[in-house]
Length: 392
Ligand SMILES: CCCCCCCCCCCCCC(=O)CSCCNC(=O)CCNC(=O)[C@H](O)C(C)(C)COP(=O)(O)OP(=O)(O)OC[C@H]1O[C@@H](n2cnc3c(N)ncnc32)[C@H](O)[C@@H]1OP(=O)(O)O
Ligand SMILES: CN(C)Cc1n[nH]c2ccc(-c3ccc(F)cc3OCCn3ccnc3)cc12
Image (cartoon, rainbow, N blue to C red; front, top):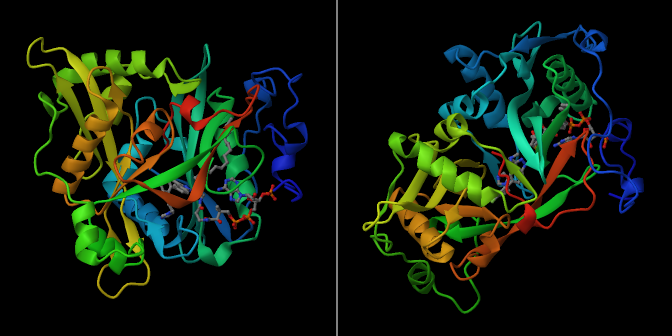
């Protein structure tokens, strides 16, 4: 990626590869905000046969259109064996957090067929970078139909969402990607913990280990039926204030993290069937809430198997351990995920996750996830353990 030209990204206010390691450049915004009157008022030009649409995710029909585009054209693994299959209820949750802007849910439709051919979204988020709180847009779900790839449509999508974010007086963004573009602030490794090894091997997600039989493999990943931690229970609405206090205090140790308030915790972390699960440890003696763990539900379509069409995957979200050892807490999360019939539990090596990955029998994934900031320079690349942010 150092030799490659990035004709679009070289024009953008992001860290450039040529500036990599230049400690003289100050940390903070790269460009000053533009006066709102000077922000381009009209949308960027599209090829004449296409038109912009603002996607009202409250509308069942629009939500279906978004789902149908993503389910056939969104992110696949490097071997094109799996494709993310975000559910409709997940998309509605991901795109309508407190303070969201419908104008940041942007689609492109072919005028003739009325078919959606591209999508990109932003949601507002207060992100702390060291001691500074920045109002950012979290950019996600960038998707161009497979038939319209490599036509430079992505830069137009990105410029349009940037323009609409600017119109709401917001000048920074955070995003992640499996591709390397200028310039990652950190690069994370993802890990997988088998819960249903027989299915994972059958569909080619995992391979039988050397000198391992299937029955030995099933035994290796077997989990107890019951969780081990006294006071471990599902999070409930009345827990929001205590979980907010616990999580805010825990996230302070990371260089980059969300600045969640109670409204954010209520939206992002209260359990939602088929979308997000969250648990906490309430001390049986003091009734104090001492620990928290959560994971979100993101199935992948299986592209080439006769026996299965979907891989049910849980993704580690935010976890806090102050009394229960993190490894024991996460083992309880694995037990609950297995009970809920997940096939695999995924985790990035962010926050303190690398302390439990090997002991809980996670195996390394085959790719990396790079984190990016738009219009905000940081002094040096971060270690994954300095990152307290998980994007969906
Ligand atoms: C202040 C507010 C600021 C808000 C905005 C902040 C920035 C937000 C940025 C977005 C964050 C999204 C985060 C997110 O959604 C999570 S990452 C998931 C992205 N989506 C997918 O991978 C789905 C499958 N792939 C596709 O749909 C297409 O391949 C896409 C649409 C990815 C590219 O379409 P294409 O037909 O394959 O390609 P062209 O149109 O010909 O364009 C080529 C140019 O696009 C650059 N490119 C390729 N993939 C990219 C990616 N994932 N991020 C950023 N840039 C990406 C590429 O480097 C090149 O530029 P360069 O020549 O300079 O290298
Ligand atoms: C984060 N969010 C922006 C979606 C996103 N975009 N690009 C990605 C590249 C990797 C991961 C990822 C993150 C954590 C993880 F455990 C496995 C992952 O991908 C496995 C490969 N894969 C892709 C599709 N089906 C399987 C997510 C993403």
